[in-house]
Length: 317
Length: 247
Image 1: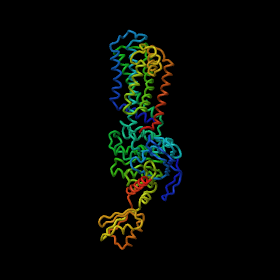
Image 2: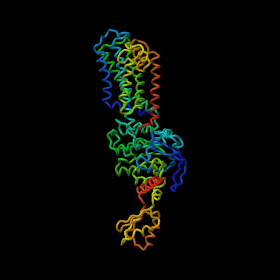
Image 3: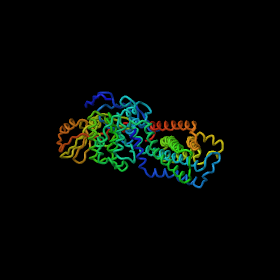
Image 4: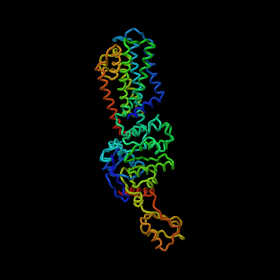
């Protein structure tokens, strides 16, 4: 069973049938609306980050995708079939935040179990090595540290040739070097044409790893695009400079494309939709900015900005 | 699926305390109940002595303890810890999960049956006319315990971690009593005997009692047990696949 080798062309054009498709999916828990009329398509070869504050519906979305819960409305399809069917065919590997491990067994025994259950399994030793478990393969699962447990979960998720890997906050509990090693392995997986979907609250992770970021809030898609697009949506770039002498705030307010302005002493901090034009206008005012820095917004700031904008919009309604 | 069965068996055996007490428990009860009983006086309404009758009852009771209580608690806990959730993300079919749990429970129930037999034969001089009866009894009690192992899986799926123990024990005591595992049902009032006749434990005990007097197990009891097995195992497999309620 092969999926047509189609890749994200990098400029937003996606080819091939979607790997995952959510069509107007809703899920309630009692009166709480966890997922609300959600429609998303994921494509082969994409690395997608699912971002959002706690309670945004990330875990519920992943549960629906994996068939661990059934939607109240709408349809979830994975490789053109139901989630459970896709899993039975060995196309999906998943690492859950809430996924417990079997107790009273050795690491190797558990990984071997995952390999034996996978219709398109890799050799056990290869899976152990890829998850950096070879050294602790003979240790009992219930005697592992949090980070080691997380690596075992990762091994279970990558025991065979999946076309889609789903990860729910995969690097929680890992130190920095473990996290880097983890993503190095993950990048290798996407290079082989697999789609990866991960939920995270580490924004720098989404920024560095994902080629597409979906921001969720209250079970809805707030933003969907490349990390750069999301940042642009949130108010472009950040400009910082010092001035020799204080300048009236009113003059600076007149600068074009301004989305925020902050003056502290002689230091001016600006967020601009078009940094080139704004900087040009600063010179146009006859000012001489020193230590000029123009940088992109971090995804974190972008995320906060988008979130604030959505909150304000709701309040206005 | 074979790996899972093997792994479940080996991790059950690693839990030495559980194995030890599961084997010890029915033996102790047997000694308590039948220890002082006469070796040749027949129990009212039967053709059997108390030590013989209690040997089969306690072997059955011990087998049920090992499989029912062990399974339901373990499974409810595994569900709570999220292992079952993880397992559901593999290609393992529902029946594979049930089969592995039943198999791992069975490796504990066999020694508990044999231990009761050994004590009954050694201490109370229980003997049969033919050697085949020993083997047939072991086989019948062991095979019959599978029904209760499946019930244990189903209970483990219906109950939450903190409710599973009381729920299991209510079902377990009610079935043991009604099925006549603790005392012969001939002492019950007629209406209760009518109900008891349809319990899986009664059919289970009847398997052994038929062999004790040298008969083949009755077709009614065997078919009743098979029906219960299909019900419990099918229900358990269905619950495994449908467990979308809680992590």
